[in-house]
Length: 283
Ligand code: AMP
Image 1 (cartoon, rainbow, N blue to C red):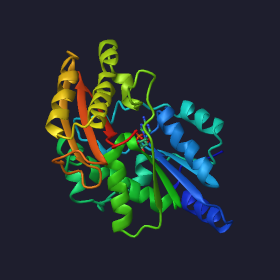
Image 2: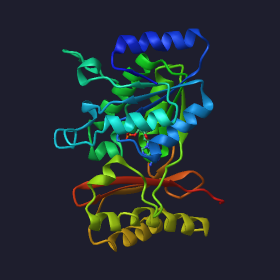
Image 3: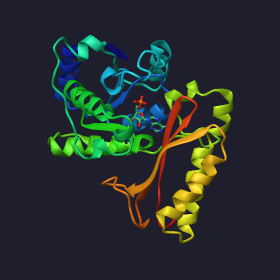
Image 4: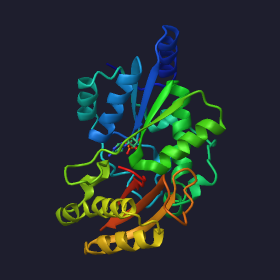
């Protein structure tokens, strides 16, 4: 496994892989790898010839009040996990390699970036779409892999790819969960023991809504009420947003037809967790 830190070296290596006829799969991450990330890597290895994992804690997607400085970092552990899975390259650039002095160009996906997460974290998706666009230009993948856990992010990346005519397929992988249903996230380590105990209620609440929907409840207000009641039974939980939206436009739906997405962000003390579930008409 190669570890590449330089942008130009990564670009030349990607060129050489392509020249040799390989398809390149790309898994962008901020490191502190968990089973969610590993599932993306496994899917890339299954579907492509060469898998490139990037590890970059991207400063431009954090607001000044967020956790950029204390975001978990453990490169040695990540390296071992990647090696065990047969990743071909870890692209591990410095902040300065990605954002050179005087960097002033950004990629903004209007509309989708302003809703939900975008309302709570106004410049977050500007940072995400910018860094992913840059990483795409550096890693030159054929297919890039993202998690449904960050449903809005995956949609924004798909939209950016389509709008900018990028010749890259975006593959979205299912959310990987702990045994008790909590969606895996690098931020789960911030949870206090009490919060950790209560956090699986998020998934439980979403599953309850899914089952009500399957039993014929199509009124989003009723489903939202039920989810709110369940979440309120966790004394620490504080809902940041909870909405049932169209899974393509992210606009609220009036009736939960096939493909409506329940999206939620909940604070457990200072830790903000997000999750979602796609409502289907049959299981
Ligand atoms: P991050 O390191 O948090 O930026 O995440 C990198 C990629 O892993 C993103 O595409 C995430 O959506 C995906 N991811 C994070 N958590 C999970 C999870 N629990 N299940 C599946 N994918 C995930």
